[in-house]
Image: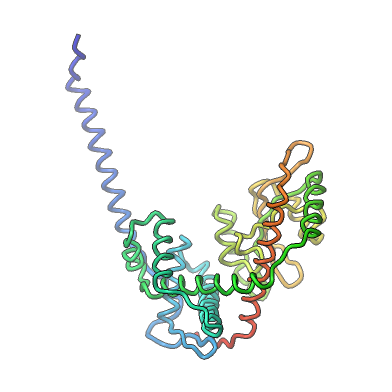
Length: 328
């Protein structure tokens, strides 16, 4: 027979539930719209010169736009707790951007507008933004498109500079591959820890307690490592990879061995720095089994490591030679 018609009470109940759900969705949409980005002023009001980098001037407006862009691309809300760290990071990023552009000009390395536009579109795609729509997001965050395009251009130029240098300087011998292979094999029979780190020089550590507090409550350790850590592991989100017992200096080794999986340590003072660790995974050779990589994978790994070392040394040398005057 035919299904029974819904009873009036049932229907009223269902309609009420639907209306409630609709109202909830509308309220959420309204709230989302109301959560307008309000820039946290880091570099002072009025237009003034905030810094010079090898004689090139940067205004506080430029730096503020870059701080807004930092908040947008990292998803970090700037507040009273982290404002000093963010201001320092934004200034360092701007210095790096300028010296990359200056170095490329010095060596006659260039990128076309087409390459910059393609990289911009790839950024939109990677972030699931419909073509051309990222401009609206930039506007919402008070960032001019030029500032964003300049960052893209600096990175493209830097990649070309690194490729030019590494092409001339990186080679991997058969001996290096065999040595690395032997090391990995031995490593597989040793208990070890997969660890990530953040390293902050003691002289910059006045807010270290706040950073630890943030890290113990925010799961995005990689993001903070990539932005604030001063160690060579920063570009890879602070990942140190597998560390065997006794491989780190004694005070750091002791701190790491005291951590459970997923746990973040306090700030450990060692020499001129503070170290913060996160335990990602504990490897027990009796329990866990690992695959040996192929020789090609090992060779590629060594090449990548050498390219990273070269890029890190290159930017460090340029930073050391740069004449930076901070005026805020």
